Image (tube, rainbow, N blue to C red; front, side, top):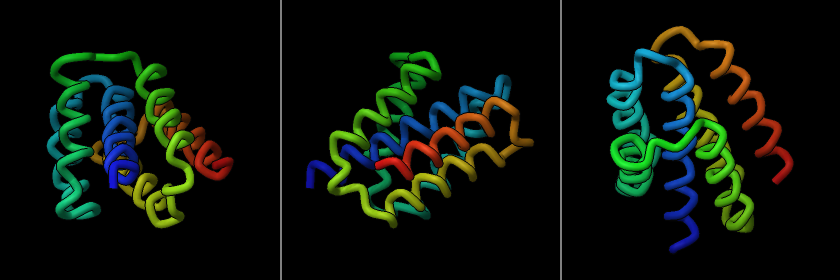
Length: 120
Protein backbone atom coordinates (compact mmCIF):
# COMPACT_ATOMS: atom_id res chain seq x y z
CA UNK A 1 0.00 0.00 0.00
CA UNK A 2 2.07 2.82 -1.36
CA UNK A 3 -0.63 5.38 -0.54
CA UNK A 4 -0.70 4.56 3.16
CA UNK A 5 3.09 4.80 3.36
CA UNK A 6 2.98 8.27 1.79
CA UNK A 7 0.33 9.34 4.30
CA UNK A 8 2.54 8.09 7.14
CA UNK A 9 5.44 10.07 5.70
CA UNK A 10 3.24 13.17 5.62
CA UNK A 11 2.44 12.62 9.30
CA UNK A 12 6.18 12.59 9.98
CA UNK A 13 6.53 15.79 8.00
CA UNK A 14 3.84 17.50 10.07
CA UNK A 15 5.51 16.36 13.28
CA UNK A 16 8.70 17.93 11.96
CA UNK A 17 6.79 21.18 11.36
CA UNK A 18 5.53 21.22 14.95
CA UNK A 19 8.98 20.45 16.36
CA UNK A 20 10.54 23.25 14.31
CA UNK A 21 7.84 25.69 15.37
CA UNK A 22 9.15 25.65 18.96
CA UNK A 23 12.70 26.91 18.98
CA UNK A 24 15.21 25.31 21.27
CA UNK A 25 13.50 22.01 21.96
CA UNK A 26 13.73 20.19 18.65
CA UNK A 27 15.85 17.32 19.97
CA UNK A 28 13.49 16.54 22.83
CA UNK A 29 10.51 16.79 20.52
CA UNK A 30 12.24 14.51 18.03
CA UNK A 31 12.78 11.88 20.72
CA UNK A 32 9.18 12.23 21.86
CA UNK A 33 7.95 11.96 18.26
CA UNK A 34 9.70 8.61 17.83
CA UNK A 35 8.01 7.24 20.96
CA UNK A 36 4.63 8.69 19.97
CA UNK A 37 4.70 7.49 16.37
CA UNK A 38 5.72 3.97 17.35
CA UNK A 39 2.72 3.78 19.68
CA UNK A 40 0.38 5.20 17.05
CA UNK A 41 1.55 3.36 13.93
CA UNK A 42 3.33 0.29 15.32
CA UNK A 43 5.17 -1.46 12.48
CA UNK A 44 4.31 1.32 10.01
CA UNK A 45 6.12 3.94 12.10
CA UNK A 46 9.30 3.59 10.03
CA UNK A 47 7.87 5.67 7.15
CA UNK A 48 7.03 8.62 9.40
CA UNK A 49 10.31 8.31 11.30
CA UNK A 50 12.37 8.24 8.13
CA UNK A 51 10.66 11.35 6.74
CA UNK A 52 11.20 13.25 10.00
CA UNK A 53 14.86 12.20 10.10
CA UNK A 54 15.44 13.11 6.46
CA UNK A 55 13.96 16.57 6.88
CA UNK A 56 15.72 17.17 10.17
CA UNK A 57 19.17 15.96 9.14
CA UNK A 58 19.42 16.66 5.41
CA UNK A 59 16.85 19.02 3.93
CA UNK A 60 15.85 21.54 6.64
CA UNK A 61 12.82 22.97 4.83
CA UNK A 62 10.92 25.96 6.16
CA UNK A 63 7.87 25.30 8.29
CA UNK A 64 5.56 26.54 5.51
CA UNK A 65 7.23 24.43 2.85
CA UNK A 66 7.12 21.24 4.92
CA UNK A 67 3.49 21.86 5.91
CA UNK A 68 2.47 22.45 2.31
CA UNK A 69 4.29 19.31 1.16
CA UNK A 70 2.48 17.22 3.78
CA UNK A 71 -0.89 18.67 2.80
CA UNK A 72 -0.08 17.99 -0.86
CA UNK A 73 0.45 14.31 0.03
CA UNK A 74 -2.82 14.20 1.96
CA UNK A 75 -4.68 15.73 -1.00
CA UNK A 76 -2.99 13.39 -3.44
CA UNK A 77 -4.01 10.33 -1.42
CA UNK A 78 -7.22 11.67 0.12
CA UNK A 79 -9.13 8.58 -0.94
CA UNK A 80 -6.92 6.62 1.45
CA UNK A 81 -6.86 9.23 4.21
CA UNK A 82 -9.40 7.63 6.51
CA UNK A 83 -10.99 9.35 9.51
CA UNK A 84 -8.79 7.12 11.68
CA UNK A 85 -5.62 8.37 9.94
CA UNK A 86 -6.81 11.96 10.32
CA UNK A 87 -7.31 11.37 14.06
CA UNK A 88 -3.89 9.74 14.30
CA UNK A 89 -2.33 12.72 12.54
CA UNK A 90 -3.86 15.15 15.02
CA UNK A 91 -2.92 13.01 18.03
CA UNK A 92 0.70 12.78 16.89
CA UNK A 93 1.02 16.48 16.12
CA UNK A 94 -0.65 17.54 19.37
CA UNK A 95 1.49 15.14 21.40
CA UNK A 96 4.68 16.55 19.88
CA UNK A 97 3.44 20.09 20.56
CA UNK A 98 2.75 19.15 24.18
CA UNK A 99 6.29 17.92 24.91
CA UNK A 100 6.83 21.42 26.28
CA UNK A 101 4.32 24.22 26.54
CA UNK A 102 2.42 24.70 23.30
CA UNK A 103 3.58 27.87 21.58
CA UNK A 104 1.28 30.23 19.72
CA UNK A 105 2.88 29.18 16.45
CA UNK A 106 2.28 25.51 17.21
CA UNK A 107 -1.34 26.25 18.12
CA UNK A 108 -1.79 28.17 14.87
CA UNK A 109 -0.42 25.21 12.89
CA UNK A 110 -2.64 22.74 14.74
CA UNK A 111 -5.73 24.88 14.15
CA UNK A 112 -4.82 25.21 10.47
CA UNK A 113 -4.27 21.44 10.23
CA UNK A 114 -7.65 20.71 11.80
CA UNK A 115 -9.36 22.96 9.24
CA UNK A 116 -7.36 21.52 6.35
CA UNK A 117 -8.13 17.94 7.37
CA UNK A 118 -11.83 18.70 7.62
CA UNK A 119 -11.74 20.04 4.08
CA UNK A 120 -10.35 16.76 2.71
